[in-house]
Image (cartoon, rainbow, N blue to C red; front, top):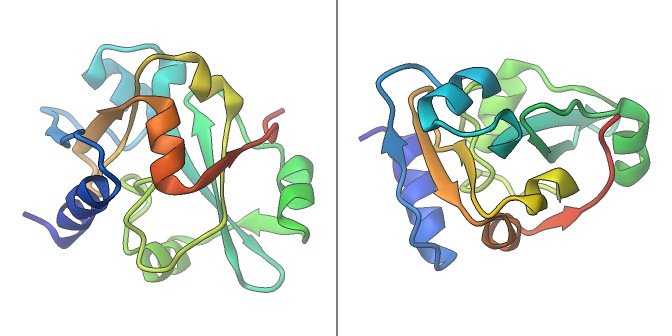
Length: 155
C-alpha cells in the first residue's frame, strides 16, 4: 500500500469515519473519470483544488466536480491574492501528487473551504491519495473531518 493511501486511511479512521478507499479499475485523476468510476453525478466528486498565496501559504478548496473556483472569491476568503499551486509545492506540502490529492491526511495542516454544492448530496466521493483510489463519505462528515468551512467561492 502506498504511503499516501495509508495516510488517508489513518486520517479517515482518526476522524471517526467508517469510509474505506476503493481501488477503481480505471484512473480517477479527473472529476469526470472519478464520476464515471463511482457511477455518480459529476458534482458528487470532491475536487481538492490548491491555491498558493503571495505569502507562500497553500489554501485548499473542496469543490464540486462540475464547479470552478473563482480566484477573486477564493482570494477574499484567504485574505491574500492567490494563484494556482504548482505540482512540486502541492506534493511537498500535502504529501499527495496532483490527481490524487485527498481532502484530509495532509503532511501540513491547511485552511480548507468546502463548496456548499457538495453539501446537497447524501454521499460524495473524494480522492484517497492515489490516481486510482477514491472514498465515499457523507459531505457533512467529510467537512468535519477536513475541518472545512462552507463558503461560496465558485463562479
